[in-house]
Length: 91
Image (tube, rainbow, N blue to C red; front, side, top):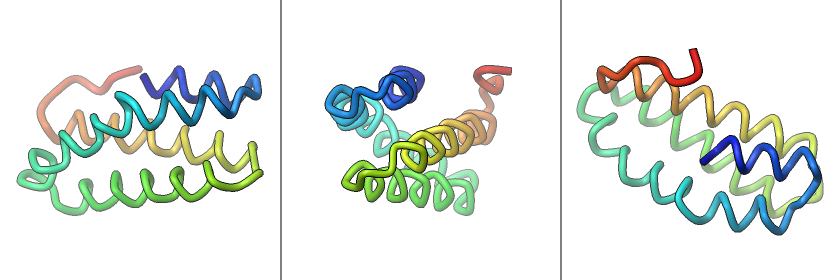
């Protein structure tokens, strides 16, 4: 999901990056928030901050910053998976 967004940002295909992010990825971040927050409130805040940063950058023209923000969000979501007891996605 988020890998697709990052791929589009690296092409650059900002229209598809935007559409991809505001589909499953955005919904997923909202859906996991209560569960992550119940276990680790700080991690939930970090995920939220990473989402907000990417949302702000998607409205800008800085492709490099968008790619960096998407990569940061991916790392935060990997950490959230660990908090919930899942193996860390992506190694």
